Length: 305
Ligand SMILES: NC(=O)c1ccc[n+]([C@@H]2O[C@H](COP(=O)([O-])OP(=O)(O)OC[C@H]3O[C@@H](n4cnc5c(N)ncnc54)[C@H](O)[C@@H]3O)[C@@H](O)[C@H]2O)c1
Ligand SMILES: CC(C)(CO)[C@@H](O)C(=O)[O-]
Image (cartoon, rainbow, N blue to C red; front, side, top):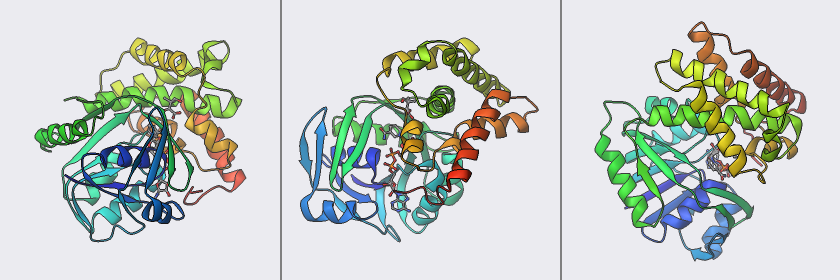
């Protein structure tokens, strides 16, 4: 299969490198990473060590592939959609955190849009070198009911052919909202308190995170996605325990002075709450504090390193 990975940073480079074991992969990224991959290939270290040789480019204009995986940060999805709209793809699959990415892509491209959640962990440590920080799973599904569910099965089979751990779901929207509740609970609380995920096992941060997750579940139900308060709170608490030694992506962003994905996480919850006449005061406060920090610190507009 021809696979284009749009957003060759941490996650995109890891998945692109792993997929290059079985498929014809092109990474779309930025310099100096792209030149390093073109010159010396891509090195993966960590959970496994391997060297692969995917193609790499900074410009996807007019490209075509059986599958485009989107792995840019949420604030770059519109630009990714515009670039992908100039090409021809069998399917376009977002593997990003946050919500709203799939709708942006579906409005931009003609191909079926798939959504996926990823629990693999990755970090780009040097140009041409990505660290595989955790084995995980990818859960995929078709985004709009009209989209071909068979496309999700084809993509899942292709990812499995490269030894990735993939499951499919007919209810990917619910899966995304559950992940949203986890990110809404953990990411801004760890970023604002400047603590690792494990600090959220204790009060007062545990209660704050739980309230953000429960509020998110309420907003999910108001939009027609059935997630109980307990499911959301338990999912967040489980991820806190399982990732106790990790620093969340948002904590890493704020400590490096980079733009965060707050708009696609707590900001999305606040927007959907307003649209469904619900209150989401904890998510609103968390989004305002992180958003206020972003403006005060002058990060962005691209948020890139
Ligand atoms: N890193 C992880 O372990 C991990 C795990 C699960 C989910 N995610 C999610 O995956 C997404 C990507 O995360 P990441 O950590 O890989 O971010 P990242 O910043 O490391 O990678 C994104 C890359 O996209 C590139 N990019 C953006 N716009 C581009 C454009 N127009 N053309 C070419 N390149 C472009 C950037 O240069 C950057 O290198 C996020 O939504 C994140 O929440 C990440
Ligand atoms: C699950 C998660 C919160 C673990 O740190 C991760 O999605 C992150 O850091 O964004």
